[in-house]
Image (cartoon, rainbow over all chains, first blue to last red; front, side, top):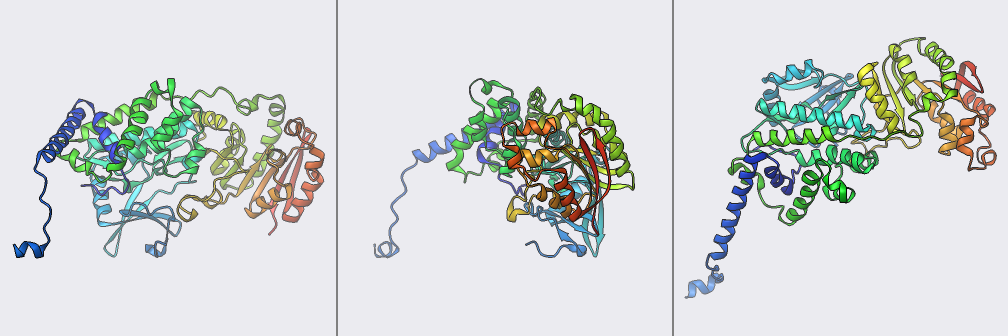
Length: 60
Length: 462
């Protein structure tokens, strides 16, 4: 990865896919799709168990 | 701040933001140090055909490699007079932007890219833009976006759009913030029907919205996401070409200003021959390295002395006039006249970190001749600068001066004082006072009447 010394800006980076022609749009939908399914996957997963203090865990 | 520079030199106080390379000066020459990453970038540029082509075409500073004690330095062509984007006219900033886009597209086609997109990387040699930051180039890596797109918008595109579509001068905005104009600010100035001007919807409205909506998600690693999704150089080239088309359609049509038709005024035309002969006689006494033409208007006298100087900086506060002069110089020359938007009553200060990142006008080179033709009344009467202070400032330059005395009863002076009690406010604005102030600091080497006015050649007291 190029060591950019300026902040390219999150919003500007995303916008570049929209402004990058048809192939850029494909990248936009691919990244948006991945994020969508990732968020779906995490929301559908069972809630993480409440962390049990180490002492209680060993006692039980 | 930056430690000692190599080769017994000193670092440029404005060259520190990119740690990959830093500019320094040694024995009057310009050099660049390189970090390991900077060295890789230089090798990528050097080994491509682009370096030779760009230098030959005058679009990139000539650069030689210097290896000393196993360390690689770059030695650059020296720019005759450094200027800042807030001293440029609309067409100058636009030409600099187009140069940047051209180089970026050609770089991408050769497997290179640019790390940033700031007009501070461009300078003007006369009226020709030239790219100066060799350290900006590096190898393009698959999946990387255009890292400088947002910076390009803030420092090139938005200033031009604001001037073209809202008639907002960009110089005070760029002088007020070295980072340029944020998308939200540009959006605030480009509303209603201006929304549909080229580039406004895509580069301003969408960008402002994108920045706002991602402001709370700045920890998101978008670069990795884009890379994984197959982002490539062709998409950057598509965007660069689109922005270039936007710039080509972005035009500023200012019409005329108070000063744009000054040269056609009757008194100006009548006095020009007398002034030109006097100025050429003074300038021609020996070759000049740097001449300042203050209040240059159409740069007529700058052009008149151009063959006697290395570089002439033609300064005027009126952007309309400077823009017209720049376009004329770009076509007809002379090639060593640099037009700049400068108000001497409010000149460029030191800006940025420690106030030294962008230097003052005077710190960029002391002239060996200053032309002050038909400008003293604007400084003293128009801007209320004390006459003694103006002469004192000229003396601090330690240089020769040609000054045109414009008396209080001159029609042009009267225009400036029509709403003032001039004889009370400017009681010391007389030719006797001028002579007294000059005698304390200069020798009057020559003088000549010019209708109701008078020309003086001042030489500094040694």
